[in-house]
Amino acid sequence: MTYTRRISSKGGITIPQRLRHEAGLMPGMVIDMVMITSGPQDINRGVHIGPHIDTCPRCGGTDDVLAARGITACRKCLREMLDALDEMEGGNG
Image 1 (cartoon, rainbow, N blue to C red):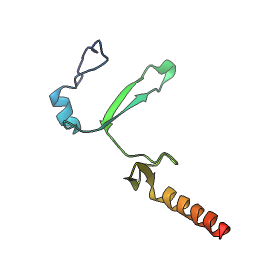
Image 2 (cartoon, rainbow, N blue to C red; image 1 turned 45 degrees about the vertical axis):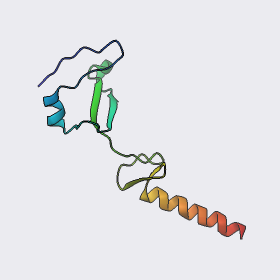
Image 3 (cartoon, helix red, strand yellow; image 1 turned 90 degrees about the vertical axis):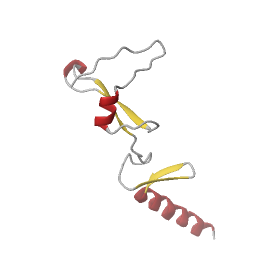
Image 4 (spheres, rainbow, N blue to C red; image 1 turned 60 degrees about the horizontal axis):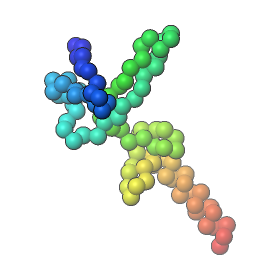
């Protein structure tokens, strides 16, 4: 189903209630908006809107991502960083 909306003077749009419900988007939920560019001359470009997915800023992965105290990273990268820290501290000892 296609929904057509006008962008407000402040750049906002209202996502219709039925579409929000079908997409699982709830009031207050954090969302991600991703620019989609594909095809010849960007003929299929658009914006994908979906629930927010934590992403590791180091590797870009979305599996096993943890967020605490303002730090977001996947377990693999956290382990690698902890191992590197252990090596650095061991070398100073």
